[in-house]
Amino acid sequence: MNYMPSTVSHKPIHIGLNAHLLSLAETYRGTGASQYIHNLLLNLPYTDEENRYTVFLGERRFDAPPSLNLKFSRLPTGSPLGRIFWEQAVQPFVLRREGIDLLHSLAFVSPLVSPCPTVVTIYDLSFLLFPRSFQRLRRFYLGLFTRISAQKARRVIAVSENTRRDIVRLLEIPPEKVEVIHCGVGEIFRPLPEGEVDNFRRRRGLPERFILFIGTLEPRKNVATLIEAYSLLIARYPSLKLIIGGAKGWFCEGIFAEVDRLGLQGRVLFPGYIPQRELPFWYNAAELFVYPSLYEGFGLPPLEAMACGTPVIASDASSLPEVVGEAGMLVNPLDVEALAEAMGHVLSDEALRRGMSERGLKRARRFSWRKMAHETVQLYRRAVELEG
Image 1 (cartoon, rainbow, N blue to C red):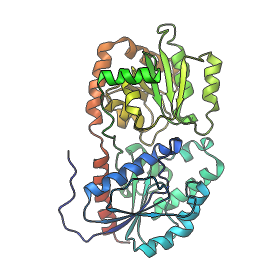
Image 2: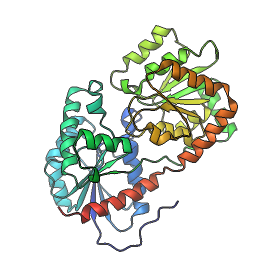
Image 3: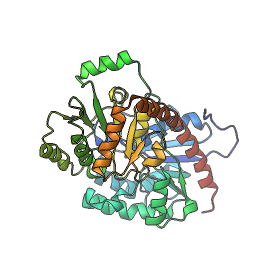
Image 4: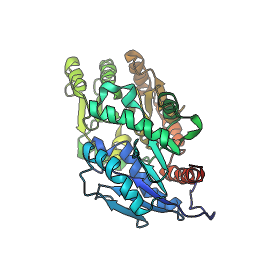
């Protein structure tokens, strides 16, 4: 479905977008929320020719569509303290100076004092559900200010129904105030010609057969369980490798310790952060993509893998069933033997892999960044039309 700019005439809205969390760096900061922000900014001008957009950010490498008005901060907002100071102390004055009618805070937090109505996007509440995975200051700031921001906002955007339920339950926000707008998948994620994939495999020295995981290396991704499940398959598949791609996050030491404990050096490979432009090749080259995360606000990697035609096994927890549906295989992320059995089943059945690939491609077509931007523009209008 094409999402063309609206032809219905309304009074134009001047919308401010706090995009200071945007990072194009090839680190863990360039994943998740940053992808959402980046793709929303790229797609808004193609779905809305009516309203004005001013974007506040620190990332100067962003190649913006010409219709977006970019305002760069002189403060070091790439650091948490710099960003917090800008959000709470500077932003209110900037919003008034620029004449903003509606502020969309693109990552959890709005200013406590805002001269205009606000909308806030919340990706997940992992800082409340998995507090030990966060540094104390970050946990305190997100826990307190996300709650206040959601309470003050005209509308709250949740990226999944699971996140919406968490927001209503944990932040005590009225259900009618929280709307689900799913993330999308980029057009670069698609099945690639076999020859291109083989050339990439040779250039990168990738094994002929491997299971792939992509994600920031942190405790809630449950990578240690994946490693243990993989160890149960080695006797049946001696040439099979496990590739764990992603930047190091908080408290990732246990992942490497598990490899050492099981003696899997040389079998479990860590290529580090993989740039977006290369990801389609990794997904296409993999025989199977496995994502046993304990908690996700949405879960982009399984969607990207399905869009590339790669069979997916994912956790049956949090939002992942919303993303994967019946296209992949869902397992209990805490059951090592069940995960190993599922992987072995898919690896040994070519017909099953083909079926999962076809269903995954069909499923992935339901999600697009253009659709996400279109639905967000509609939400802006509803937020402005509400009484203050």
